[in-house]
Image (tube, rainbow, N blue to C red; front, side, top):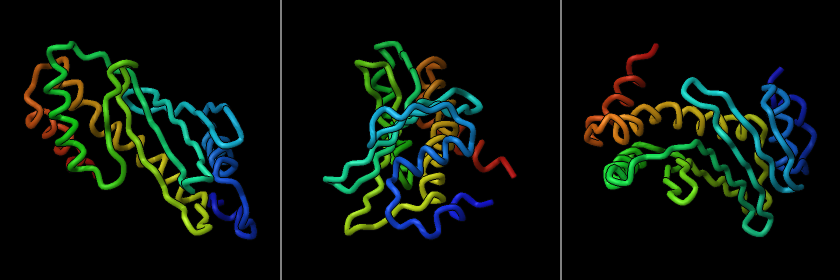
Length: 167
């Protein structure tokens, strides 16, 4: 059964309730932090990603933050930031940033639902999967830049070649 089939008649379902249902559907570990926020762990090929979704009724925005730990050597930070710029030019939805104080790589995306728009479960599921797929795609490039001491442009080619190489 598609995720959306259970919610066809429900026009006033809170977005975080939908996220909780999706987490249960995929059997992801999750914790409802507050009425407007949920955190979960999603297993990827390279890492387990920490994903938080929060709803702001003021902004009418569902905000997704996907993080994973990364502790690059200080001398490689300029190259990491250069790689982030190159990667973000290739991301259609969302963007990466590095939170140096927390030693976290972060993928962020905000779904604006202004004017009483409603996010469907399939849309939210796609949003979460897009975050994980983006993190999975570019994780090797970030590692090559920080620990393999590769030039950012060369490291990004690995992510691009891998994406085109799968059928």
